[in-house]
Image 1 (spheres, chains in turn red, orange):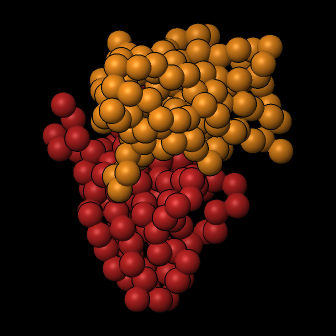
Image 2 (cartoon, chains in turn purple, brown):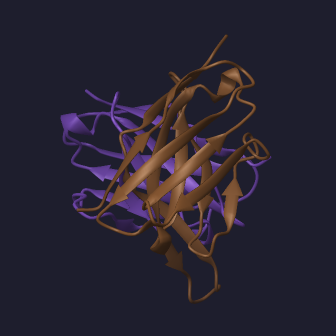
Length: 110
Length: 126
C-alpha cells in the first residue's frame, strides 16, 4: 500500500521562507499525481491552497507556491506570517478515482 | 456563492448504519464531481469517496464495501450511506466539491477538493 509522506512538524520564523514536502513511500512524485495542498487551522474546515502542482486557488496569496522538487511535491511559503501557523496536507491523485492524503505537517511560526 | 453543508451526523452503535447528506447551493451536484473526506479525533485528513458526473464511484480501501456515495439531483444533495460502522469510523466528515481537471497530454481526468463544508460529526461507540 502506497503511503504519502510529509514532515510531521516544521517551524519557521516570521518573515522567513519554509518548504514543506510531499513524497511517496515508494517511487517519485511527479506532476502526473496532480498534487494539491490544503491548510487547516484547529477546529476549522480545510482550505484549498494549491492544485495541479502549482496553481493557486482563488484568493490564496502569492506567497504560497507549489512545485516539484526532486522526487517530491513541495509547498513553499515565502514571508511567513503568524496566521500561517496551521496544519498542511498534501493530496496525490493515484488514478482510478482514488486520492490519498499525506499525514500532514504542523507548521509553527515563531 | 458556492456552498456545501453537511447533515446527518450523530451517535451510533458499532454495526449500525447512518446516512450523511451534503446540501449544495450555488451550483448543481449533477454537474460536479463531489467528495467526502473525514478526520478522526486528533488525526489527519483521510479521503473517503468521490462520485463523478457520469456516476462512477470510488472509495478508500478502509470503507469499500461498507460505504456508498450517491446523489439526489432533484434535492441537489450528495449522500454517504455508511453501513457496518466501526469505532474507527468515528470522525468529522467533510463534504467538498471535487473540481475536475482534464490533462490533454495524458487524457487523464483528475480532481482536487475545492469548496469545503464545515463537517458533521459521527461517533461510533457502544
